[in-house]
Length: 594
Image (cartoon, rainbow, N blue to C red; front, side, top):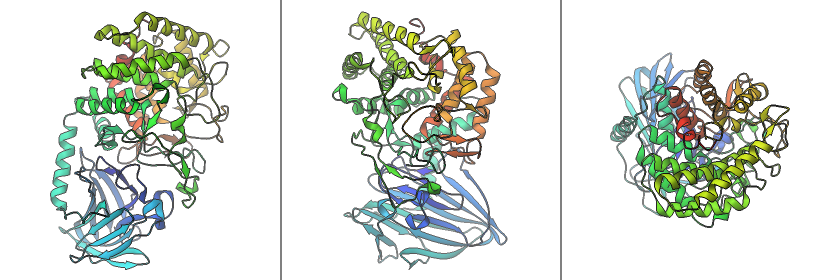
């Protein structure tokens, strides 16, 4: 992934940008080959030799990608990056750098706006640049290489010698505005490297897994929509959770569920400005009538995320359908109330200024939660098979009232504290009575069921139970027996649970990091370290993680890169390193009540 804090592009090992939505993460893709074929849009720069030796890396402490090609005639590196966004214009800069001998290259630009459907009108400007326009969108391509049109594509052939540097710059802008001024690619390379190295240089989280922490923090920063501070869950849509399956979702939005993990990761690493921007985004997004709160919003807090299918895209490795938008935004999920209350409480604990208007909103949300906490909901995993009394949803309802009590007591905020305490105790008793199965000797996925759920691994981390409670230890052991595949954790058993979709998905990487935290809280440090390091080994060659992993085929699945996975990695590393441990930060809010 390369990105500019407004959108992101995915680059293949073969030097092809196969996914890019301009101008925002959630805009319609102009390169959609990732979900189809090259005819659906891509920008490829690669050696003419059919089988070059390819290695790649991120330039240290940056989001600048370097792909090195070796052929029998020589070696060259493709340097790719997106300068941090300034104004409405966005740029993709690619520089082919000759290292030894000479290497013949080919380039192919296939712009297809509208998720691979709209062929733009391409013209040659007076200065030799190419301008492509389709409706509101315009892309300018500048390069010293001779370009020509072929079959509605822009192609070229060129060679690079040792010491030679050949740039390709694509610039996006609204089609009703004049083309943006040309940028100096070398100056932008220097400025982009300076931006990222200075930003990651502020990291205060030191631990034995420093490289993984830094790469995850850079990834999370790159997934942040700069104008609003919203954290995009992933820059992609419809990358399947099982190859050939239907569990294909659009993740280019911001989830309230990520709230507390995001705040803790940012504050613990010393990024208080980013944490403040995220806190403010949460308050703006959730503002309004409490009964209209959603589980996710658009990058600027948009609420209408209508889901539809793209029939002309066959999907990643023919995994259809390709979905745009996400119908889950209309679901009822009780856990988000606890996430929001916990996040805002952690913000106060972390030193972010108390937001009195935010407290008024929190009290209104608690009033609504009091009316609905005993209802069925769709649960943390956004089940489409009907509502149930999900145990973790009730646990997070308990968190909401617990954090209200803690915030009111600690920061002298007004509210019916005694009433909240009674509600908190009522919910706690309800969960312990109905959410624990005496035959399984475990907490279960939903009231009355015999199924397990990985979200229950969080119970001591959020303070619902102390880690030495025998019911939690027994639940971890039950999850080890029932939800592990090759030592990694399923969210739940899709073969047993009716979630409205055909069974089958990979293990969920964030849940596997939660098991690391659970092992640590149970005193099983060796197991925790062993699992954590195994999870690190699953990252791709440049340190990125998707949403899930398929142990049988040994490949990542699901949307990529996934913020939730990298957040869980950062927080698990902090827990293992005994550095401002997020698990203790959350659980200490509530151990007395447990």
